Length: 252
Image 1 (cartoon, rainbow, N blue to C red):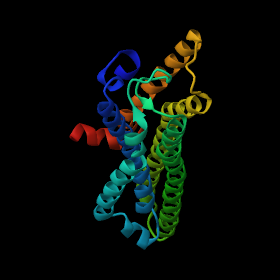
Image 2: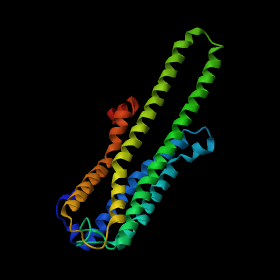
Image 3: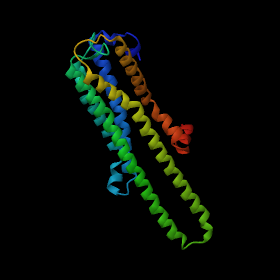
Image 4: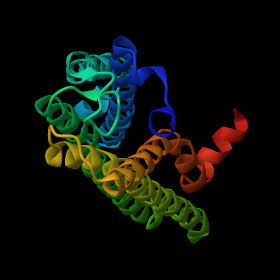
């Protein structure tokens, strides 16, 4: 917020400019990729393949966390070289020094930090739902076979169990849809705006004050939306995840 609405030290001190943006964009990268990897873990855990289910383990989760941190530091390392303070020909005082620097860092953010993990959330989320439905169909088939050898008094219990599973499936689909939709709405505009401003920018300072004001407003708006995305998963799980997540929250 301070970077868009006020003057702070990141716009005047070079090393603060570099470190602040490096930590900021690395944290965003870690957040989105961690959620994407959690989606992959859910897909592995719901698979009917034994070897895939065994891949979903605490050890591999810890390894993934370490790899995500390394990946975030590596892809955001150009910020330490490219970003400089006291810039007068850029949308912000702390930004890429040259046109190539701005283009590279913004495209890395748009593609590697935003679009790729979002696509992974969509793909593996849909595959997880497919696994869950496939597993439920197998259970229903087995239940129907068992019911043919049992008394009719067991029908209400089986029906209740079936409804409960369908309810969990419904909440899973709802939670995935809400999560991916909100992340796309809140994070994609920021990456698109950064890439667009870098592509159309020139080395000559613009003299159109109205254009600069509009660009600054759009930048502040999409930046605010992007920060909002960082705190949205908790509310998605508790509001759209059904009673399972809410009961766990109340227990904690």
